[in-house]
Length: 133
Image (cartoon, rainbow, N blue to C red; front, top):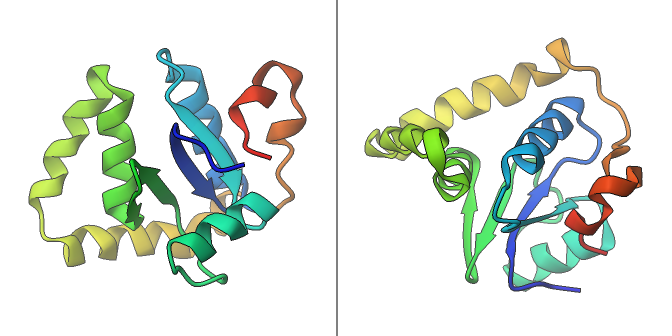
């Protein structure tokens, strides 16, 4: 089910991505975010709806039918999260190719620091409502 909430699509096989999903859920005081893995049925529906590659492996943020990816997605998520975190949005002033270079660098080495695994996030009862199905 596609929702009117802000939707975040993430790599469900990446512990680094799962870490950030938990980070956002913990700080989402206004309950504005919903999540789906890129590999899930709903994730694939979103990718089709917005004409994105089915093999994309980056964060995708959908806000009011506007799609953000990579560093722009990450910064827009932090801005939407509010509070102290919105201060990081100042990095949007850097050209996207520079921001995405660093985003890609972290993405390239994410599995060095976090092992690749299967996401177990949506099996936790206290946060099940945050995941699209």
